[in-house]
Amino acid sequence: MKILVSGKGGVGKTTISALLSIIFSKNSYNVLALDTDSVPNLAQSLGIPMEEAEKIIPLAKNDELAEERTGARPGEGWGILFSLTPKVDDIADKYGIKINDNLKLVVVGSIDASKEGCLCPAIALAKAFLIHVMTSSREIIIVDAEAGAEVFGRGLAEKFDLNITVSEPTIKSLAIARKLIKMANELGVENNILVLNKVVDEITAAQAVKRVFGGEGVEYHIVRYDPEIVKLEMLGKGLDKLNPNSRVFKDVQSLYEKILRIKKS
Image 1 (cartoon, one colour):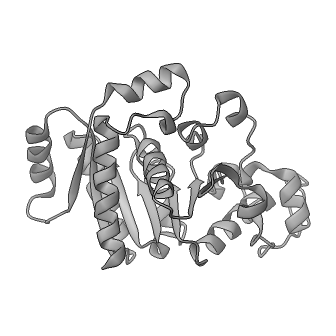
Image 2 (spheres, rainbow, N blue to C red):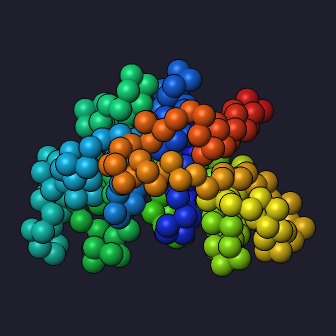
C-alpha cells in the first residue's frame, strides 16, 4: 500500500507520517518511509539524533551518487548529457537508513526542478527513484510530502492508494486541504482521508469541517493536541519514545486501524 501524507506547511504532516511508520512497523509490516520535503526532518521524528540527521544527504542533493548513476556531476554546466533512467532499484536497500527491523527511511528531498533552475542529474536520480518505488511491490510506503500542491504536479499522485491530507482545525487550513483533496481525486487517488491535527475542541473542529466541505461527505479523522509532542521535541527525542497511552498515539493508532480497513477492502 502506498500512502501520501500531504498538506500545507506546519500542520503536522511529519508527525503523522512518523507515527504511522512506527505503528505499521510495530505491527510487523515492512515499511519504507520517504521524506520528500525541501527541509527534511522526518529522520529526527523517527528517532535519529539531530547531529546524525543533519549529516544525511538527500538524494536530490547527493552529487556523488548522481554522478555514479547518471554519468554526470551536478553543476558541470548547461548542455551536459546524463541518463534520465539511472539504476535505482538498490537505493532503498543500500542507502536506506534502518530505523528498526521493519522500517527504513530514505531522505529524497525536494524534486521540484523549478526551484533548482534546471533538471540536474541529482534531481533526475531522485525522480527515477520515486517512480521506481511507486511501482514496486514493497508492503507499505509512506511519503511525507513537501508542503502545498507540488507533489500533485509531479505525475506521482495517481500512483498512491491513499492520500492523507493533514490540516489544522481552522477555516484557512481546511480550505487548502479541500483543494488538495480535490486535486488528489482528479488524479485518480481512490481513497482520501482528512486528518484534523492538533485538535483542542472536537465539536468546533467538526463544525469547521462542515462549514468548509459542506455536503461533500469527506471522511475525516481527529488527532487531538498533545503536549507530549512538544516535550519530546524540546528534549530532542523522536516519536519512537512517545508513550503509547498518550492522546496523539492513540488517535494515530485509530487512524492506522482505519487505513487497514481500506487496505483490506
